[in-house]
Length: 262
Image (cartoon, rainbow, N blue to C red; front, side, top):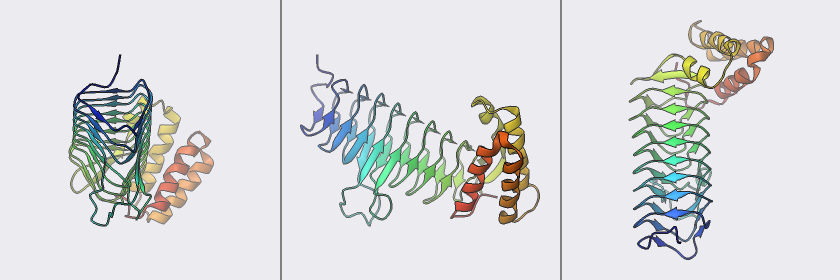
């Protein structure tokens, strides 16, 4: 029994695993590849050089692999790559990449992406993230693993959001957000360490206590950014329980290009 509804239009050149299901009136283009057990809902449009992994659930009316909303795009063969076990809810729009950057928009694994989310060209979304309803990522945005972006939040182009960040509802994110922080508002402000999120992910009390020290160094002691990075490096050397976390934080701060929210 076919898993492709008779009203769906699937190009003969598309590469779909035999276990893929496709709902009514969906349209799938010739350069699309979809992995095992992924479900494509009714009225979805999947086009462009788009690769989708295994066990994804794509709900009705999603539009994936459309050309970038970038006037510089001139038809270059760029890509959209989506990993495994992602949930992509209704009316999401994910664009192809552009030749001016990575030529690829990338979504990792195990992400929970809610309705009306827009992921623009050349974005990189990590693993285990949550993008709530109407979250909008402009071009070239990076979102780290386990980050949560609240509903109706807008993220400015080229902005990076670190791992384990919690961004509250309706935030305006126009500067880089360091890992482990909790932010919200317009203008955006850091509200503290994302302690509850870290606890839920199994961080020990010792690791969280050390990250609290790093938070105070960065946000409460009036230091320059470079001086704060130096102290965070010293914390990493003296706190092996949280060394990996602090190296992640310090590396993010060194690479920040738009300035950090502070």
